[in-house]
Image (cartoon, rainbow, N blue to C red; front, top):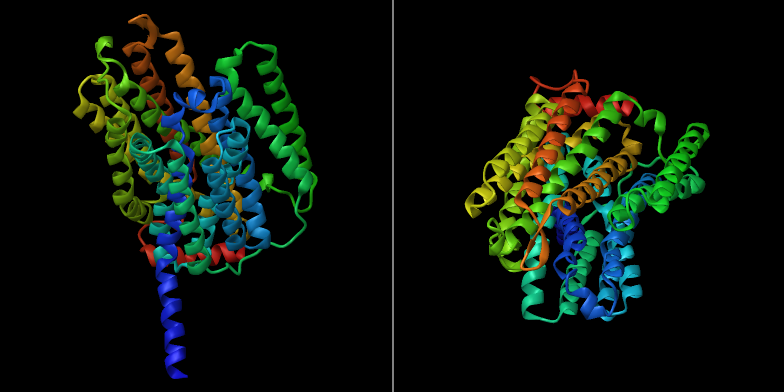
Length: 489
């Protein structure tokens, strides 16, 4: 009997030690799933028999469902159990990958990619679980790592996809991601405990529908504006509908006893400014990988392009993921010592500095990699600080939903960045061997815009009220005071 008890205690201790790496694995998988189709986009019209416009929905569908489901599943996690909802999100992601592996029909592929969008809720749910389960002295570094998995997975997804597609059938890529998803689901089911922190109540179904309608109109307009025309009646109508729907949604949230999103809490400076910073940080970060991938693959005939293959391009971006993995504990220590707002400001300045390097020289590969690495350093600091700012400002029972909104703002920032970069590059093109190719000036202008947004992020970070409980007291003491104060709230 004693041996059985000892074995049970040992297994529980092992599961506790694996909670952080298992959740980080799930977050990395989420980012990988979002990026795996990007190298395939030029070839998918031929492989599926669909138009280029239809193929673009393989990215748009994931973006839309991820944006809608992140706050919805976050709220569901606060109400019904974060582990339970986390497993649902991972299961939907894995099932979507299996569907992609089994079909070449563009309609089924789009539906499958929409299912994969549910994985966007993995990061905020995991951050909430870490806050509930870990001691205060471990929370900062664990949350920093969890937030950095977004960049780590994005950096790993491109070379992984390129290698698989180069040496195997494109369906093999989705079988690999299906296997990884099943592994992540099994590990989460085994290692992650259900959090006892709940905020019971009736789920705001109308609020979820209203938020979904508002976000779909917004992101659809942003993502399709370049194809449909920014001044077209469809795009203008979508923006008008977005404003009207979200205004009505906000008003209803104020009047609902148990709202989907506590908009009064979200309107406080300590919460609203981190959300605004997340929007700008998402924009500033995304331009790095988005523009770099196109620039280094540009033909040599352009005078600036390096003509690299997809595999070589992925390897150029790979150091960015390693940097985020290594530096996430460093960013957590800075936040513990100086406050998360300072870490966010430092990160934003580093992102801007990286783009200055890119503007100074975007012809030599080593300078391109160096500039991208500096941007990744800044992204690590910024992304690790954002959830810490949210955790300190909201009650424990609303952690998942508030973190979900913060991730949503980053997603919107990335979508706006994609549209802005596309608009800039389309406007600045020249003919190379009879084909329109973006000019170097267009790429440099995109870097300048992203760097300017990074400086705005820094200004917003410095405007966030300082935490009087932060600094000079040590991580453990500061974390304990924070938790005590939040319990009182």
